[in-house]
Image 1: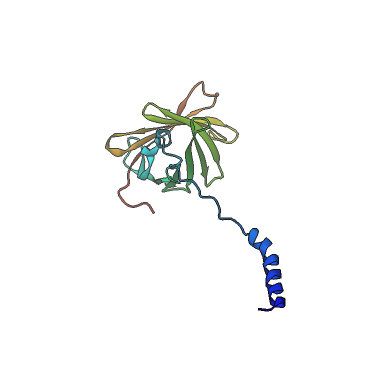
Image 2: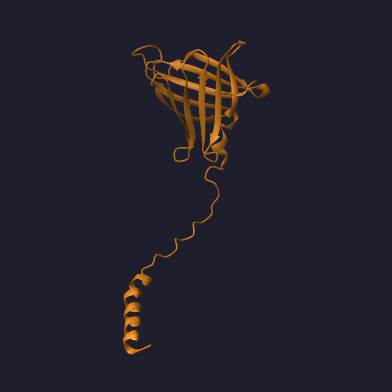
Length: 185
């Protein structure tokens, strides 16, 4: 190699050196950690997860099907409510570790949205939310839902309504969720 060739080689190395020096480093390794929602509080509502035939308490006629799924590595529960005679709705529930409460957002085919909060009380999950128009147009009220495990793997969902800020409660609905006899569509 002659002097001119050596000069070109040195120039090429000098020009390339800054770009080599600026080459991106490999990203730092992401630490492996335990799944986020493993504490028992995140699983207090798991008894509701399943494929269900839903009946009014004490009746034999199925009024709805409901698919309740555990999602996102156990961090949320999604409900898909499918009544047989009208359009449906659904909810997304999760344990909020910042508040120590369960939260549920219900949305249905009428455009209704209700945000519920509450938690586990004994063997029940109890959540309450303000439902606009629950007792008719312009008649808002608090709705309290209590979910309890029943014999044979069923779940009872008792709905109560208060139009006086929670001083008095009256019945709204009373459903029994029984394991589905056919797959939910």
